[in-house]
Image (cartoon, rainbow, N blue to C red; front, top):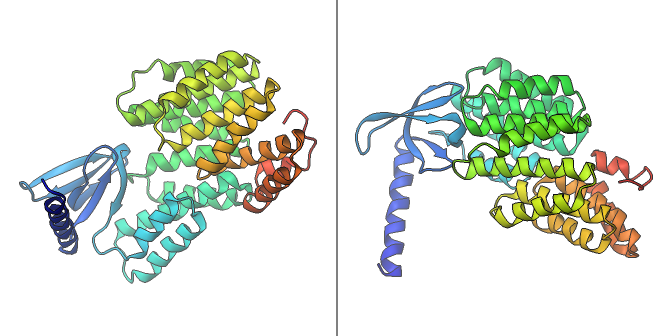
Amino acid sequence: MTNRSLSCVLLVSTFFAAAFNAWGADSVNRKRERPVSGEVSAISKTEVSVKVTAPKADTIKVPANEIVGIEWNGEPPECKVARSDENGGRYQKAIDGYQAALKSSKTPSANLKADLEFGIARATAKMALADGSKSDEALKKLEDFRKNQSDHYRYYDCVNLIGQLHAARNDFVKAKLSFDALGKAPWKDYQMAAKIASGRLALAENKLDEAATEYEAVIDMPADGAVEESQRQEAVLGKSRVMIIQKKFDDALKLLKEVIDKAPADDAKVNAEAFLRQGDCLREQGNDTDAVLSYLLVDVLFSSERTMHAEALYRLAILWDKIGNKPRADEARERLKSEYENSEWAKQLKAPAAGG
């Protein structure tokens, strides 16, 4: 097929997709497969049912863990922009966009309203994970959603975020309750995520054996597809953190190299933590120059992972000073203060740097 013919096919496909949406279709976007367009006829915490007419009349049930998002028939244009802002880490803009969409829809459907409200809560929670001053607001929005939308397809995502916020506040009891609830989801990737989260809690409480057990359980699970493989790599990263605390730096570096070699370039979360922990190992071994390079990769390539980006800036501020580059240290310090003013890492700048 020539380039011109291919362009014509793409143009026609785009036209029909747009026309179909204009004729009154909801579009359920999936992680692993093509979107399903039709009429959303039922929603539960585990699946969304869509009535389709092509290639034949049928009802397709999409598991909730496969759903990236839903574009609702008749939704205002602000929705698409807000989703793009959230995916790009522009959380306040996303919140403003979701709120504008709610206001511009004179009579939003119950489904659209619930999705927009969760979008606001989710973006607020993502901000709060990097800025603790917003955690009360984020928790209230999420708890309200969980209470009012207890059978919504975003239910388990909501529970996961609640657990993460409680963990960030060092409220380990409430966090564990949330992650236990997440572990009851009927999908392996969510069950893996629950164990990883429980491992992080154990690590935060210095229960190293318990943390290692949770991580090993995930590592031993066969990974079916990219999503589960990403979870498995997160568990390997968790195991490397246990090793770092145990000062087994060479063993940890071997694990981290495996993760870095295997992780897809677009898996920002896994890559950011892998380079962050690599920097930790090198720093602990006294290899400050190479540690700086690892932290710089987080800063330059994976700044959308805001919690880890804040940690990388903190490490850079300390290490640039240590190796005699005060201008770069000052730059990292100012960026940390301006971009993450209320983060734990910005607050640690006021404390002695020894021990990080």
